Length: 185
View 1 (cartoon, rainbow, N blue to C red):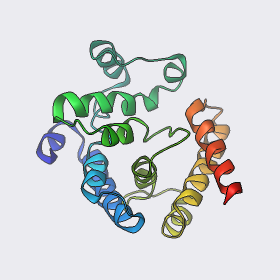
View 2: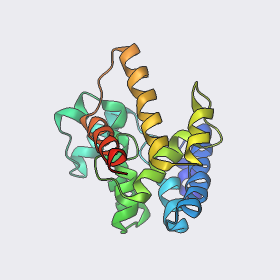
View 3: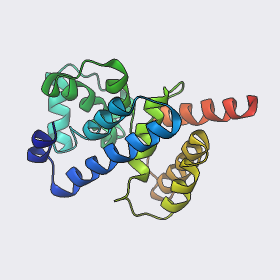
């Protein structure tokens, strides 16, 4: 898998994928998830990112990946939905938990599994990431996974509102789900 990914991704994207795999495995150990599944999902999470947006849309049509209006107005997140199908067809992944983690790693969703949460946050906190707030996220993820997810969503809301960009509805659903669960605890 690593060799194939190395051929299709840029050097920077491949290094990021290795970083996500490593961080996902570490978080899986910390939070009691399957470490091998976490590594595989982390490694393949961006397997469709090497294609341009136009190529991603064409591949979605070819592989019957449905692009609803929310995806069409947020094209940078299409690669997750496409990536799940690419992981299945080109890398032989049949484990639904891994595929769902790849699919939702950019937008999340309400009711995320532990592995989905790990891949989502590992994508943000892996060692090669460098952005305002990453250290706060790294600290939080070692203490409370759900709190780290809430912080990451807050950061995304702020960034997207500054850019006047759209937010995928799944991210809002994830926020609401996590907030409601935190109130019950």
